[in-house]
Image (cartoon, rainbow, N blue to C red; front, top):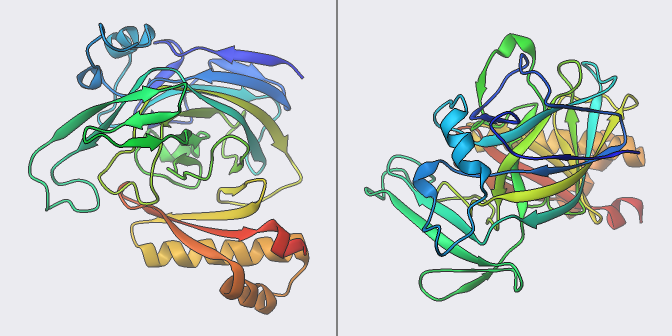
Length: 313
């Protein structure tokens, strides 16, 4: 196992999109660990540099990167040797750390879960206390931080062309699932050679729903282990935490999200516990939780969670 460190720069970031034609900025062997630095937001979100630490590469990325507006600044892609379409990339999220002492939050007219209710743009810069792991809200609340990456994904099928990073899809991307912090594992289906993993959209903390459009957006550093799984074959992202199995679904219709996430959980229970579809459906009704991941990304999200102790008890 080799450890790599991928720094954020104009040469290693792509802004606002995924695309199968992107060349890898790093190639790793299956099982290697990679520390990835990310940044978040355009020039308009940067606070007073005399009061806050701004990652020095932000100015270069803003000046030189090909920007697809709107979208996220993503670090990558990283090629995993031997990955081919039909495989699965296992992404173990080993650690997530803040890279700066501030974050930002945005309310935008005609966006978010209540697009017609707010008619003025509001941008907040929120101080982050890394020692206490809290964000100081303008009204005096110290909000506990639980950092995770909103965007983790592989390259889409070549036929999709260049797609926005805003909308989550089968290749992952803007999942905005707050369960995917340090200690979680994400499984992504591979659609092109090398898998081509990228991440970004660092969140200091987010509620399920992410209703006003954004979380506390911030720069994060993540440590990942990237493992090629040729023994797994599925077409949509799944995840695990130390305590739960998670299936996910994205669609403009939350009802359709529910259907897909539930069907995938029934399939997962058949694979892991050899339950019949009827028994798995019953167990989901008794013990699984359907949660709204986000309602702001064009395709909304539902994730279905069930405790491992119940499945294997």
